[in-house]
Image (cartoon, rainbow, N blue to C red; front, side, top):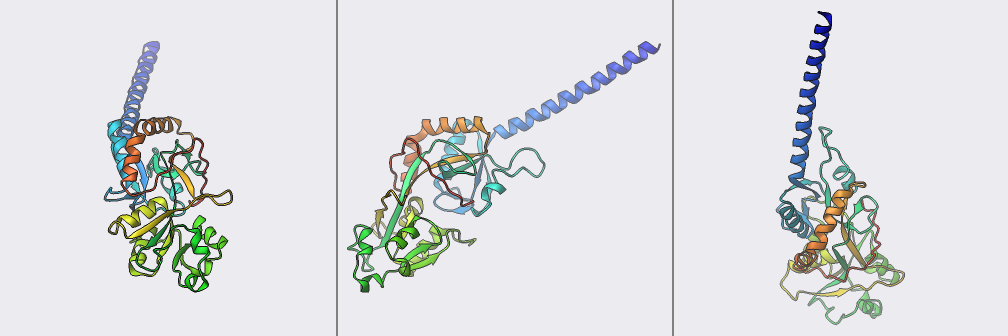
Amino acid sequence: MYPKKLKETAMNTFSTLARYLIFTGLSATAITTQAEDKFRVCADPLNPPYSSKDLSGYENKIAALFAKQLGQQVEYTWLPSRIGFIRNTLKAENDNGEGYKCDVVMGVPAGYDLTETTKPYFHSTYVLLIAKGRGWDDISDPSQLANLPLQRQEALKIAMFDRGPGTAWLQKNGLLEQGVPYQSMTGDSQHNVAMQIDKDLRAGLIDMVILWGPMAGYVESQSPKGSYTALEMKSTPDMKFDFSIAMGVRYGDNDRKQQLNELISKNLPQIQTIISSYRIPLLPIPAQPAAKDDDD
């Protein structure tokens, strides 16, 4: 009798273990399948022209393009793009401890320190944007600002940020005293930097600004065509204005990086058509871009 009872106990234990393994296996499969049904993006809800909760940004459009080709739905984790953005989105685990909040940041500098980056999908430059009809219509090259008569220089009202190559250029050319100070990250829940600059240009608080290409494109798009003179800033050996933009994933997420690289290669003409529709200046993508940033 004892061996028979022992055998029955062993069989019952095996049966229970088998059911547990099957159940957990199915649960894991369900979780994996559910995750694969989503193209999970970390994004700022109010950051035109990049991303917006109304999905009007060019990063929203590219995410939708990729998700459609993968047979997935886009799912957003929204957080203002401030210091700690990567830590609190891409690298943050879900509250239930299963996986991460999101998987892709649609736009980071190529070679960004805080994420693994894909191949770049566009290359742009900073732009000197000058409002027309304010007495500066004769400016056709940024270098002219440094050589203006003192009286004209003193009348300059040019936006100056707390960081970035635009401010470095103003300092190099002796124009810091003409700068109107702005922060690179506004902390404003109603306006991102591009929106604030657009508002202040319209109000006449500033007449010109050196802005990163996508933001300059946004400002131009908010006014009738021809409202601004847009002069591309040219990089020099000691001052870089042009950068490549890629997508960011977690370090070690190599399968996703490869998948995104394939999607970028396959869709590059369409991606650049989307971006250029936002009046963003596009330059040829260098073979090996090397851009770093420590904003987050």
